[in-house]
Image 1 (cartoon, rainbow, N blue to C red):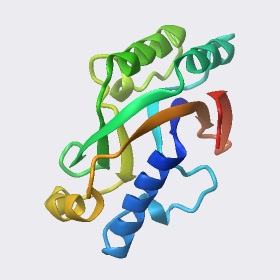
Image 2: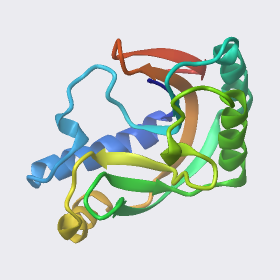
Image 3: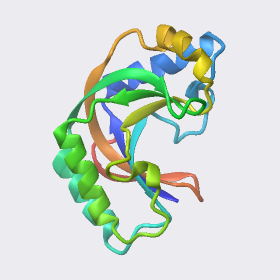
Image 4: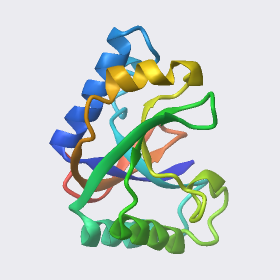
Length: 173
């Protein structure tokens, strides 16, 4: 599996990591507990089995042209009732256009994740991977003290097999 992800500006990343820490301190599930070096706040635009030939270069060009991309976080919710706890991302026209362009580059790639497909994609930053909807109110009180703003400043691709990342444009911090 290969992803296309956007990375947060330092201030926005700090806000999300702060929410991770507050959730963990409250005894709730949190991505703060994932200590893998690739674990950082990100927005996934697409996921496929592998990139088609030339896709990496085209994706890098798209990201370079789009960032910095201003972003505003919205409410915190649990997807599908008992799944990831997420901070929704306001889908600006620029973000939606970048998402569609990424999917154009990956047209025909095998293993396209339907959750990221245009028309179905719900832009978000994950706070916890497994979360009970019953704890959503407490999570909002603990993690969502405000609705941060910032920017997406770089892109990367995560390789699920090797558990490594490859830059896809912008400035990785």
